[in-house]
Image (cartoon, rainbow over all chains, first blue to last red; front, side, top):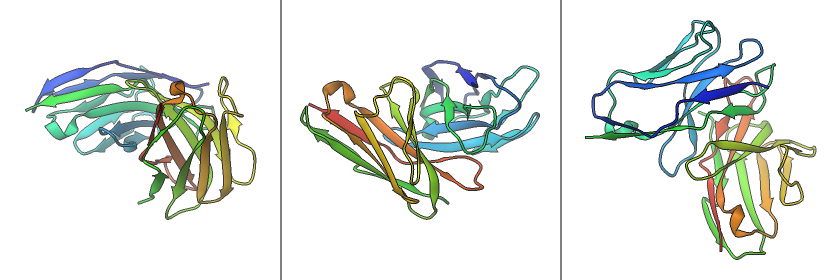
Length: 115
Length: 115
């Protein structure tokens, strides 16, 4: 099945710093790729996604580009805020087909942004 | 947007008792729901896939008699932790698959503490 390897944290940054969280994947075919965010005490929310190679997902200032050459989907933000403090998960469908099926998650990266 | 609720959000119980957690899709029908377990500072681990009107599919290593899943309607799935023990203490998260949607929608999670 598909799998994902995510940079482990924790990551601590000052406000307005640049953020990169690395994610690489192993997959059959070209499934959609996702980044989820989990704020303290809450469930997961979809942050952004990309459905095919070279697609760039973006939301709330975060970006990630689907790179099939390097099998990567790194999350970036140019200027982080205190409110971005959360745990970030890279994910993709667990099987070859994609679509409606279980997701496989990276281990999560905890980000803390200090004022 | 699609909303998934979980109830209760937090539960404390004595060892040996059973606890039921509900997962509801509030504004859409979900033929498939997923149950995850999240240990502190770790990623989500898929426990089982719940399909409406049929038996759940459990992941390897998950005891189906311990974690009973019922998906009786298109908007409700329940997870019952039977004869709970302290090692069952965890954060349980459900997600629901909405037909045609880009990804699953996650509930806010239920924190279970077994004393």
